[in-house]
Length: 78
Image (cartoon, rainbow, N blue to C red; front, side, top):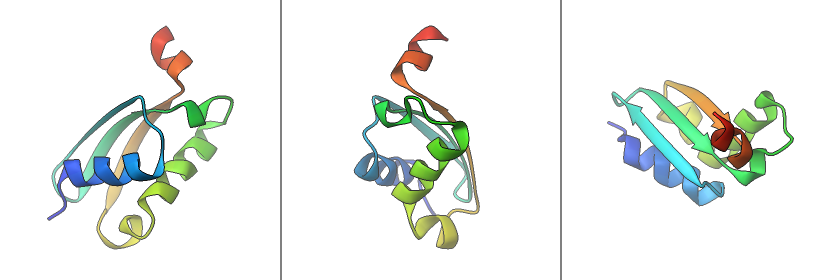
């Protein structure tokens, strides 16, 4: 069973995050991710960066991942 902390570790390894929260039940996960890499990018491209950080885990271990992605400026403004 996949732990949320393991998902967070993979995201942090592939993406500079200033804030990261991951929760889930072992197959379905939710994440709030704040990264300077997201600045100026459309949401689809932001999500692609997260998928790239997770690599094969998205195909093999993670059944579903719901994401809310923000640049640091967007996060501060909310």
